[in-house]
Length: 183
Image 1 (cartoon, helix red, strand yellow):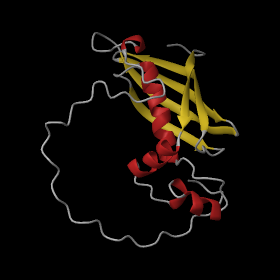
Image 2 (tube, helix red, strand yellow; image 1 turned 180 degrees about the horizontal axis):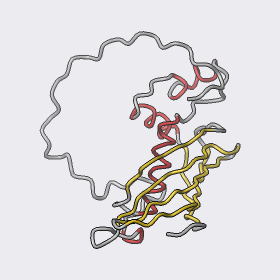
Image 3 (cartoon, helix red, strand yellow; image 1 turned 90 degrees about the vertical axis):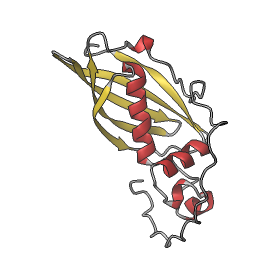
Image 4 (cartoon, helix red, strand yellow; image 1 turned 135 degrees about the horizontal axis):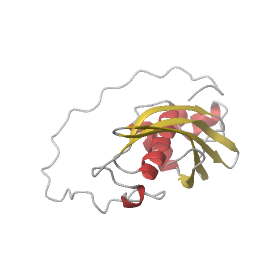
């Protein structure tokens, strides 16, 4: 890892499922992330990805490159053009700075993610990669090239059934989100 090093690009298909699942996983229940009709009424052509999903994908991009022992120290991003279903976001990164220390190296990586309408995300990620026998190289890390793998996931076939839970309470209506504001 050295300043100027280009990370290989990562293409991420922006599916409706990714947008909705990312919003739900990050507990962002704003209707513009899951309800296409409401999103259109609020001025958007469709649902769009939230910032927390983008933040997670940027983090994944960095850890996929630097390996499973990499530790994200700081992620600072800014959103631009929305990610709509049916598009593809391409993440690219450039190592800007590297600081060597006895336990490993810390790098600052400039990240840019673009889609069909423009620049979706820009920012920097600070990542520490430990040195020594416990650190795996990126070549040893499993690739998740755009599609999550369940090959190593444990089977739930023998798991006990989930307990019966009471129904979720009705939630109050959400306040209207400003059009064109941060997601």
